[in-house]
Length: 417
Image: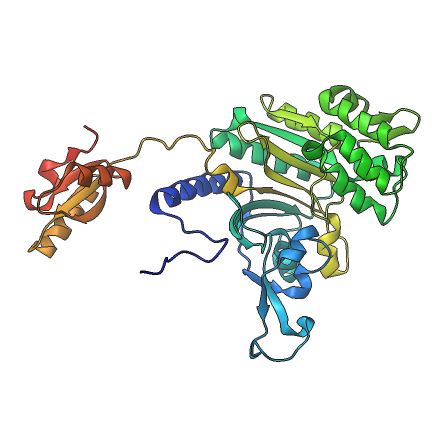
């Protein structure tokens, strides 16, 4: 019995038709972001373990693919800490901060970076989730004002529009400082805040009562219900909060929304048709966010297809000085099945040949078809081509067929009828 040959667990192969769609989407995203002044860069897939484990990556730091030190034998007696010093990157943001620290003298004062590449996380594989996947990121480093956030949001919403998804996406915004202030009003401080954020992030999954129970279990029962009631009310109608610039907590005072009203107003002015709103329950899991945070949700899947925020403290970790930074990452794998239908293909010709073909003449025939604007695939034809053979050509994305024996150009015929 032949052994089943499959990719490694959690990995996947991409067949030609899907690869074509992926490249089309990538091309659209790149073109859009370049119009907004972002410059594409590339960083290594491998980074020092010390940088990837810098307490900035949240739970991703526990899902690293670590690399055995060069020269070590697998059975050599060493401690885990001494066995590895490199790992595959789990996102594109942490490598970008290292890149900026390495090349700051060669980069403009305000640097707009575009990245598209694979990342790896050693999580449990499940339907639609793989251990290797593609991210597309834009980041602005060196801009301290909320101009950076507005620039990122307008560019990314435009990218979704260019993909034909403008009517399906909603932009949600919040601020990590607002979240911290909300939790402080409920009695959370210091080491309890991260756990409280994790609980609040489950609001849509387990509901407000279960979230309230988790928050109370963390030791701050006094203001929990009032905070959750405010969060739920603002989620239903955010306009009053955006107009006032605060969240009102009954009996607990008010909490600032910082720059969020100005950010939302600016995005709505530039893109009046875009759906943009405040969601005070939005948390984002990464530990490095320091200010505004945002997500894009898609109506067909009901989950996030893009996310990001401000992370002013990360670059300074490598430079020894503060560098303002903000970024937005598109969940590339999630949007592949959601993009607008493929535009009608151009002329893609299957040039059929058989045994004893004149190779030079075959190449010349292909050249003539290419000169007429066709993409040409050389296909060895069976002795008696069947209907299923031609159906297979269509499934490969081919639109027309021609016979090399006929000189190619004279007998091009459609595969559609």
